Length: 82
Image 1 (cartoon, rainbow, N blue to C red):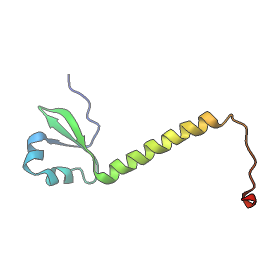
Image 2: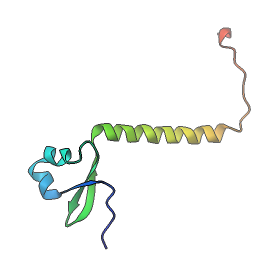
Image 3: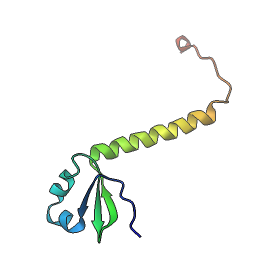
Image 4: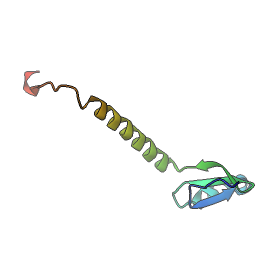
């Protein structure tokens, strides 16, 4: 049974071996799926996309912390006191 591919662009492992940069460029800045025998074996993600993914994950974790702490009592602070 074929697995779903989560990218628009795909390259074979052979194409990646022959010319890695050309293979990455085929994604036009988006992730590409690397296939072995027509099955995705891994994804190549450009650095900018990977960094954006990590930022989104951090934001998601912060949302969970905020939600968890939203029921706690507030403490009034005067910034001029310090």
